[in-house]
Length: 419
Ligand code: ASP
Ligand code: MG
View 1 (cartoon, protein in one colour):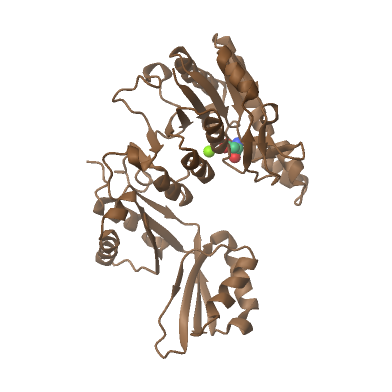
View 2: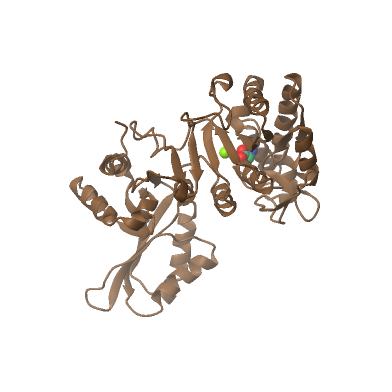
């Protein structure tokens, strides 16, 4: 017998037919003898609708009331799933965040989970009752409902799995796993059978939108194995946990030690969410970087890549950096307002750029990954504007028009194409 947390996203519970399908997945695991907790999102589209209503009600509004409104979607789906499970003869009951309680910090609308109380649910587990838990919500210290930020029910599921020492947390979604890159760009992208937490963190933060980044961090800290899999699989033709044998479904996100055959590169991610800003003829002297990046930090703008050219005459240099697209206009205004203090000739920028990243824990022990990338881009005539590297990642900034060409080239270059 194992303990399993099963999480179902918005598209998986979008209507009653799908909720019945979800219930059959749950029933399969219960009948295999497992203790099961289920975490669900709101029906697809519901949370967006609720968010829009709060905005229409008043552009500036109380975050506590926002939370009261947007947490409502999950209340509907937990209740419906519990009803359907009971109707199928599976003992179940719904739980809202405050009833358990799942305690959060006080950052309404972007709360973090502080603690999951185990008392009541442990008792119900022993009685064989399935707990159907509302994702995305908890109870803040002010005794009011708090939500975890968009996509937060992934994090709810991992927090529940960590609190109850679950053997696995299955994230059922509308794709059948994590792919080496976006299959819409590279049709020969492959499903990755196993991926390390750290790699998944990079993939998630770079726009592979399968899991909320925070949920991967939490899973890594508590060593909760995550299985990303499709809720559209036929529940009766899918093996229960423990009976999978070689039929491993989905993608297992786990500790890197559990991955025997590790590729040097596991995936290629890209993000169009970047903008670049260039300052021409900045004085090449101590304190200049501080005068540029200090004010940006004070304005709460995250700078990602930074390139400073070597100056030809030892007096002036050019500096390029990237910021999130959403902050581009604000960043340019900040730089313009500081023009006298920084001292530069001109500021220019572009939002037509993309960051492409090659990710793999195998890079730690293999040289030449970056060299291969540069050669590949050179052969295709793709100009690299900026580069950053970490132990398990090399990222380049290029013109957005070359996104597909660059991603496809790298995907085959690192041997990721489906045979
Ligand atoms: N329903 C919430 C949202 O749409 C939480 C989630 O789906 O994870 O953001
Ligand atoms: Mg989601």
